[in-house]
Each structure stands twice: as structure tokens, then as C-alpha cells.
Image 1: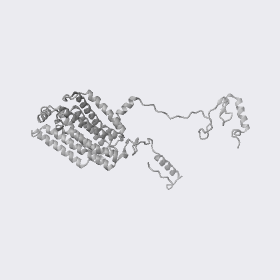
Image 2 (image 1 turned 90 degrees about the horizontal axis):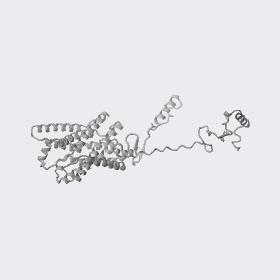
Image 3 (image 1 turned 45 degrees about the horizontal axis):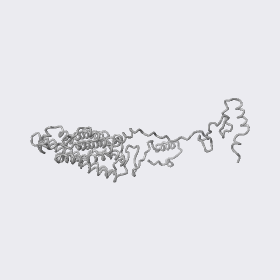
Image 4 (image 1 turned 180 degrees about the horizontal axis):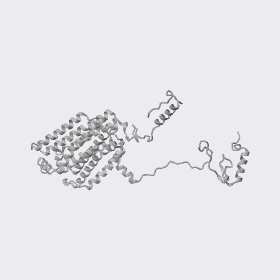
Length: 418
């Protein structure tokens, strides 16, 4: 075969091009040989093929584009992200849980060290330890309500969250808030408590208990309002058994209040009744959520950090109450505050059931539930496409061809939904 460079243009064409170069300087950049891509002044702009791309063997002075490297994030941003893991993470991976709980311990230690200590505790060092434990579980239990609320807001849905669980939470924390507020602020309740348990008996309800109870009640009301706003009760009406239970609770409170007003009972007994109601509700409220997860064979929509933080708070609550009683050499704090002691064990028991459901029975639903990213059953992150799938484009193209008559309905390709 002949050399392509020698026969690319006939002689007359080469002569015409040389004559044009001699006539004026405006054509000085015309190639001596278009295929070689050179000019009198040096290399010319590389020639492109018909498809608009460079090919092997052709000159090119365009350097290949390198992937852009994202700059490392500032240290302050990474530290802040670590502290926000309980609010932003929805994977529940062991590494995220460890980092999140470690940062939670730092926050609890800082708050507990600067807040007033319980001066009734005889050991100065244990006063600090008790304060740190108290505010750490206060933070854990208080923050545990936010991940579910954030998840509901992002998904614009409360699917996966039991309506019965949420409304029982409101009733339970209403009782617990009244209980702690009265024990902490009411001199009459404190007097009745000392008369019954001895003048030296210390009331173990602390400021962090009051703050947690009121804060939890407010957040439970917000979560219930989300269910109403996203029409969760339209899809899943409240069970009749829960309606009957709440009506019964209201009647019991009214009857007990009447007995106190008639001096047939005391307000201390009324508060003990409310604490018992809180314990009963805590025993019952988790059951609808366990059943809902079982029926759906999934924990999707039920944020795992709710359980992680709740279990952490329950464990620390039990530890603080036992430690306070040991330091005081008086276990009347446990017998005189049964609500706080029993709540820790109840929450831990059901938290273990939720851990079993999430990590063992239904592990394929781990991951982000915001439709932007997810996790496979093996626990590896899977980035879901952020742009629309091709189904709509294929269907539109098929519709255009059918209107033009180029394909019939029998020849139309079937598009499988992804």
C-alpha cells in the first residue's frame, strides 16, 4: 500500500495551497501537510477526526484531565461531625456507635463537672462521678428522641413508627414529668416522703431527672404531631385497646384525685400511682413497635440510634441509683424511687429485643433511609443513584416511536422497573 501522506492531496492541490500562502500572511498557519499537523511556525492545532476525538498516533498538546481531589475537610468540621453522629447517622455500624457514644461521654462529663453537685452525697469524689453519670444518661435519653424526629422529617413520613408507641409515650412521660416536678419542687411532698421513710431519707430525684422528664414530654408531643401532620393515623388508626387503656388511665387519675381531696389518701400516694402508671406504660408501649417490626419483617423507619441511646441511658440510670445508695449507706433511695429504678430495667429489656430484630432477624434494611444512600445486607454502603432512572426516558422514547408508527405495540420493548 502507498504511504497515505504522499497521496493524500494531488499535486495541484498542494500547488494551490502554496500559492495561497505566498499571497498573504493570513494563510501562514495553513498546514504544509494536514495529516501531519505542522505549520511553518511550528506545531499547529491538532486535527480532529470526523467523530471529534483524537486517535492514537495523532499529535495532541491537550493534557489528559485528572480526577479532581476533594480537599480534606477541616479538623473542626470532622470533630463536629463526630459529635453529631447520633443525630445524622442511620447505619448503626459498630464504629459509628463507638464514636458517637464516646463523644456523648465527653459531653456528659463536661456538663456534669460544671453543674451543681448533690451535696447530700458524703464522698466528694463520688459527687462528681454521680453528676457525670447523671448528665450523661440525661443527654443519652434526651437525644434519643431526636434521631426518630429527624428521620420522620427527612422521609416526610412516619411509616415504620408505631402510632400506639408514640401516643403511649406522651401519656407515660406526662406522668413521669408530674412525678419528678413534685418530688423536686414541692416541700409538702418532700415532708410526706421523710415522714414515711425517715428523717434521714434523701430524695434521689435530681435536677437532671426533672429536666429529662419535661424535655422528653415535649419531644414526645412533637413526635405525635408529626404523625398527625403526615397523616399516620389515617393509614393506621389507633388500636381500640390503646383507646380503652388511655380512657381507663384518665378515670383512675380522676378518682384518685378525688380521694386525696377527701383526705382518704395523700398526694405522695398519688405520685406513686403516677410512677406505677409510667412503669406499666413503659412495659406496654414497646410491644406495638415490636409487633409492627415483626409484621413488616423490617426495622425500616425505626431509627436504631433511638435504641442505642435508650439502652445507654437505662444502664447509666441504674448505675447512678445504685452508686448513690451505696455512698449514702441507705437503699431507701431505690425503694422510695421505684419508677426510676424500674424504668432502667424495662428499657434495657426491650432494647435488647430491638437490637435482635435490627441486627439479627432483619439485617437487610440497615443504612440510610432517606432515598439518597443505602446499605446492602452485608453492611457495605451502596450509593443509590441521585439522578432519575432511565425508565422514564425509555418509556417516552417508546411513546414517540409508537405515535410516529415506526413500531407497533407488539414490537415495543418491555421496560423493567428497577
